[in-house]
Image 1 (cartoon, each protein chain N blue to C red):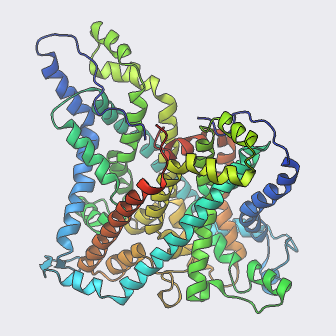
Image 2 (image 1 turned 180 degrees about the vertical axis):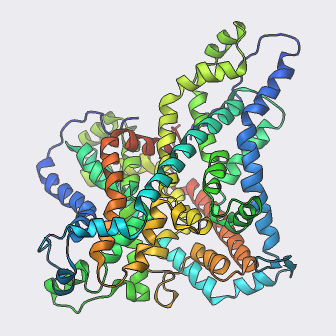
Length: 283
Length: 307
């Protein structure tokens, strides 16, 4: 499936559509542009002339003030390492489980797979309170482990998606390896994993976005500012400068979004295709 | 969905005991996820049902009180308000959001430079909900750019979007549609590309105009994907939390934007009424299941499957 590349004949009337599409697209990014412009506006301008588009004068200290107000560097480090671990771990465990479900019959396998499908329907918020106390019992409240280990070990959607990918790998490849005496692990590692690499890349992007943008769990589980992830730290700005000087709030928001938007533009093709794939359940 | 058969197992070499040992491999491969499922999902899931029948402030032993929590919650005006708000968000954002996305997908599918446009449409999808909420909080202020532009253009008094219960709920709907549009567009574009061009050409030769083609061909052929996306979008709007928590500052004026998940969070983590909170979360589960069942019932009537 290629959303971006399939050539299409240029339709008649596209000269008429272009300005409309361009206007719609600009409307979509206008909030980001307003965020950037506001992040360079000073307090006097925000108070006296909040509707002017361009900063007058340009105030460059907002960004530094925002960066220094709360430990942004620390939050970035936290978010990056949590996301990397969650993605790597999830890809490993979900592809392993998917291989087990797809290709190795054992008693109860079908029932177990249906449990995975059924629990995928249950909203995470339903188990939020007991999950919190389970983490408290293990001693993982106010610890990144609570955001990493459960995320790695439960991802029914990932198992489902990876199983769809494995279903398209020819069984004959495995049989040939078995006759050569390869173990199941060797087959998984040297045949299955390379064969489903594009699919796993897509799954990895989805898992990364979820891990990076997750808000409710860090909000409930983390107390120390030093442990905060980027979205959780950003949410602290709501109270801090809530009143008038929202130039600083927009600078903080820009600090947390601009690097992500740049990463998105660089990897746009991969990211958009991945979400299209997963949105269709791996079809 | 073209789900493969559950076990498409290879024929293992006919060696004695091989199959016996192989099944342990199967269990070992599934073990990490199965263990996680048991520990981090099934166990808390069962505990949520048990806690819903207790009174508990987080310390000491939960006290069994039967159906009192449910009696309390099902007659609670707060939960009633939360369910109403959540349903409004779902019923406004899903149809409008999906319709806009289909139109955008049909238009974008045919023009040059769609990769460029897609990036612009898609930017909110990769942005965290907290950032989205903070940006829109500034746009929607009484002295913000939206209200100010309306004043300048039409001379109406400044509107404090987030200060009024009904306007705040509409604002949540607006931002939800804006934030999810790009994802739906991309998914519908992928679906459109599975429609064979010859079908469209045949219709055009038969004299079907763009509007007729949209309703008679594109929509029916897309309907399985529209159905799937409407289920996904509906379930995710039932879980609205981040936006109302940051954008409207908790439940908003007069609980105007209290959602079910906000209600669960509020009872549990702000008020330490964990039994009540669990009962409310069981209500969320029930609502999710009922609505999904209704959608699957409606599917038979409206969804066109090629076969």
